[in-house]
Each structure stands twice: as C-alpha cells, then as structure tokens.
Length: 377
Image (cartoon, rainbow, N blue to C red; front, side, top):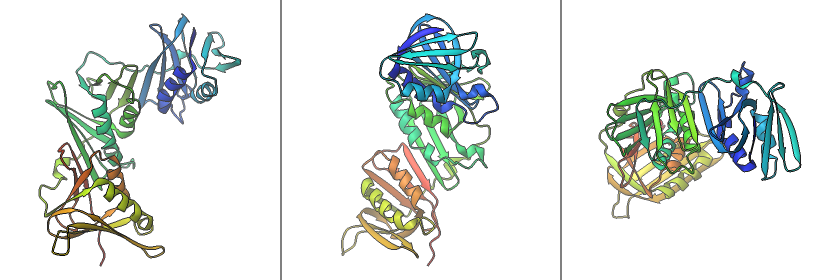
C-alpha cells in the first residue's frame, strides 16, 4: 500500500471512525483502524462488534493495499502534524507503515488487515431515504430520554418505526418518554420496526453535519443490524432484541390544564432553580395559576434546599383550565427544554400526581412525557 492524502482530510476521517474503536477488547485488532485503498480513495473503518463506522477520504493511490494501525497512536500523531500532504507506505512483511508529512516522519506498527472483522455493507434489501436535517433533529429530540442503565437493555435503545409515509422515533427510561414524527418523501411498502441503540443513533447525528443528500437506512433481512449510508460515511449497528413498551399507552389522552410559556423563559427559570434543587432530590415545583383580576396567568418555579436555601421565579403564561401545582425532576425538565426547537412550549397537566405532557406550540410532531415527583406538604 502506497498513497498520499491531505492531513486535514485524514484527521477528519479518523475523528469520524474513532468513536467505534473498542476501548477494551480481548482482540487487539479492535483497537485499530482499518486503512484500505478502494476505488482511488482511502477507506477508514473501526468497529467494536456492536457498531462499525466506515469513512472514505480522497487520496492519491500509487499501490493498492490494506493494514490496520492503532487508533490512538495514529490519531494523535496525525493531529499533531501540519496541514500538509501525508505520504503513507506499508511494509507488508513487517506490517509497519511509514508516514511522512513535511519534516515529520513516523513508523507505526500495525496488524494484518485480514484479522479485521468483515463489516456488512448496504445490500439489495428495503431502503428508506430520509432528509439529514429531519433525522438529526429526530435523534436529538429522542435519544436523551433513553435509559443508560443496562438492566433493561430495550430501554437503552430507541424504537424506530417506518409506516407508509410516516417515520417515528420513541425513547423512554421509565421516568420520561420522548416521541418524534416526520413525513417521509417516499412511502415504505411494508411497515418496519426496530430498536436501535441510542449511542449508535447519536453517532449518526454527529456525522451528518455537512450531509446534503438524503440518508439511506436499511435493516438487514434477519433484523439483526441496521445500516445508515451517507455520502462518504456508513454506520452499521447491531439492533436490540426485545419488545419495546407500547408508548402510546403512556401518553395521557386528556388534561385539566394547558399552560403555554416562552421556552427560553422557562429554561432560564429551571436553570436558576436547579442550583437549589440538586441538594433536594433534584425537585423543582411549578405552581400554575390562570389569569384573574390581579393579572395574567403565570407559572411560579421554586426549589428548596435545607442546606443552601431556596429560590422563586415567575414567568408569564397563558393558562387554560384549573390552577395546579406539580413537581418534576430538574434535570429532566432542563434536558427536554434544551432540545426544543420552538419559541413556545405547552405543558398539559391533569393533576399533581399525573404525568406532565410537553408539546411544541404550532407543531404536532413532538410529544414529551415526564412522570411527576411526589409533593410533600
């Protein structure tokens, strides 16, 4: 293998695939990045056997070949180089790759590419195309609600459903639920449903920044893996086996009070209360009061800590229905407010003991449910 490529392209490619490198493995090759020439380009790939990321970058190939090099050593060295052309040449006999850039030289010892696992590619199965901006926003608005505790593996994933011209992502951790819909440009012939690890979807969102063409998604015939194909990147992930809870039964169908507020104002009030809430079971109280002779509707956000003190914040609100007091986990509130892409948010409540439902004002493609915390008198 003999080739040359630009330092910035190689550095960017390595940053894309490096997240799939196994941090701890009994197989040393899983700590390496695969470098292989392919159709006049340099292919980079990494896998931890649960997820694989492949990326192609421009290169001038003089001799075809392939090897694997330690991900951390290669990445750190390339990032330290000046923005110049890097020349790479593999000594097949010793599996050592010589790198030269400007006045820098290095020899990095690798492992034969034949020991690297085979990564599935997009077959001839059913494909779904989705716009990158829509998919990135859907991932951002659901994955944060997935569980991080491995005791219930199904909840560490996101349910992804494609039916007719509708795509749905749903994530839940037992305390909250986030659901996001979008319309597909081309309807699917048969419904497809899969549970994809939240970490894999976050990697997909991370690499879609400059993607312009639709992202192609395919689930393998045996429903064990999902593939995402971008212009110069492919991500393959194992699917989670199991039955995702029926999330439609978690979303309340009625409410007593609907409170509409400015998203940024509620976000700031929750942020202020979180300072005191973190020492008090992370509890933030919302007292919702409709308009009366004294003035318009408002939401009072409070948190009390026995050690530090307390705080009170008021924000204006449009309240339809009865007054209500409800408490939520401050972190859950802050996280959902951080991913909203609307100037106003509506909170629907039935009682202090019933779940709170958050919706975007003027849009019906997102719903978020948070279980309330017990309010002690």
